Length: 437
Figure 1 (tube, rainbow, N blue to C red):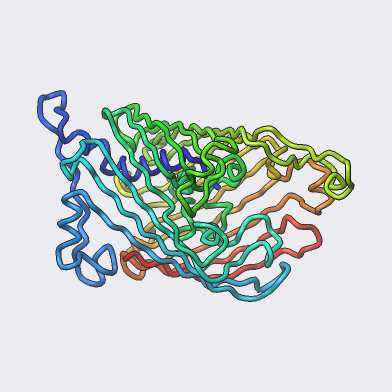
Figure 2 (tube, rainbow, N blue to C red):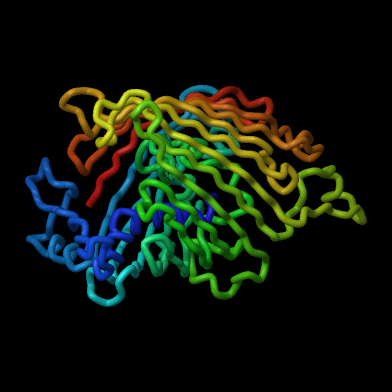
């Protein structure tokens, strides 16, 4: 569901960008002959209503570990969501997802300057609103997809090592979690924050060419030395990767996926924004959607196959009101567009856009909201026509209430025109609770 470059780009932008290149600099003298200072380690201390996580600093141990290069981040998400009108099946579903991420900064630990190890485990449980209720091709709850749709389970979904050899160049290898790619400031998550519908969490056009997890490797380039300004990544990975298992038994046997992506920070009208463009290609052999379904039921008729699949995608986010350009608060717009081969991929074009705000209400600086619209255009295919698969579109609005800096309650409403014909437009209500531990 996501570009592998994903891992690169965002694990780079997060794990590396926030600490990476600066950490490499700890033993690299600056141009003026002075060594760069390390960025401050996270601080988990504070009162129950002020600290960044529910469990706090563990009597000082968590802060001490962070200063030495080890951070452990945990969160849990619970959703209660149901189809209240239209769709195929009305009713409410309760489900949840949990995530644990361990980051080791080898530079802080005195082992390897510029080295980073990321270990991630995640699982889900319960029931989620999906195609069987709405008739839509995309889930109304993105949490249902990760680590996979066959819950309950808990898997080691990422084990990645990244090594920067300079301020501008790094390499990564391992089992990658690319579900965090296609980053967007206002519409990007696995479903724990911001929008719930998969159409807004990433560009669905990439779902065929790349699996969400798998063995792979790649390179990251930081042109200016600051990953917050510009980031370029290129990677390849196994197309048969799975959330469970290491993936060594399938690596590169069924094909590989190649991805490249670039993201830059802009300052139009003195306000923060981002522009991102990416592309991917898979050399895997797929069953073509551009064929007659009789090929599957009449003996002797050949089943058409498609050799490879490609997709190109673009997204942007831009503040249109930002009181302080140094703070991630204000009112902004976002948009995504994608195109695929339309042969291996049943979605030929995808489009989404919306309006989002962060910290606009005085005294509610950690609240945020979003309103979005998406449209998926089906490939021109006899098979899809025979299946009743058509263009689909949807709308979503949410308001995320920050009960504390670590606890977020989010009412959500969606209106979806299904991709399946003869299914009425669905109205979906839901509420989500996310807690950072």
